[in-house]
Length: 189
Figure 1: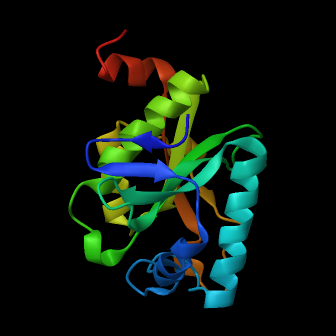
Figure 2: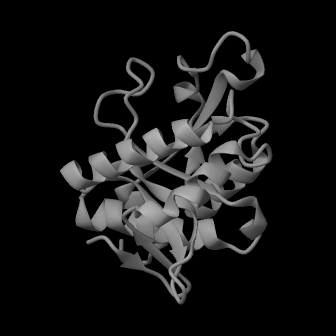
């Protein structure tokens, strides 16, 4: 099912010529504001290699997000298993994204996210998709709400991979949407 195309975007696997963009977004202080640290070029390259490996092995993960007309990469989006037990049970599927700051505010994440939700609920048959962010990350929370995800306070958690040196980034709010709620939003219920 990948690549996926929307009116303006293409969701596809990573290529070697995407490395500069991937390094840019992982080291940009605005993009990484709500993460405990930025990544070096070497760390970004290793992370991209891991993303490609997971996609190649499973067809699932965080994909490159590119302009449809030019195929120029602008960020990433995808679905992945959270691997955050006991906070989120095994099998919980997360939608996540990161976008180059220079293209913020154009609705790209909302457009691509709707396509990824369709992919997750229709192609993969997931029962629920979640996303999470720190409370201060109002931009990402607004995107989650545009997707139809709703805050589930009973599932909020302190992220175990956020170091003690960044206590303001530990507590995460969980937003979720079920397949049935998504279908209702699509007028298919």
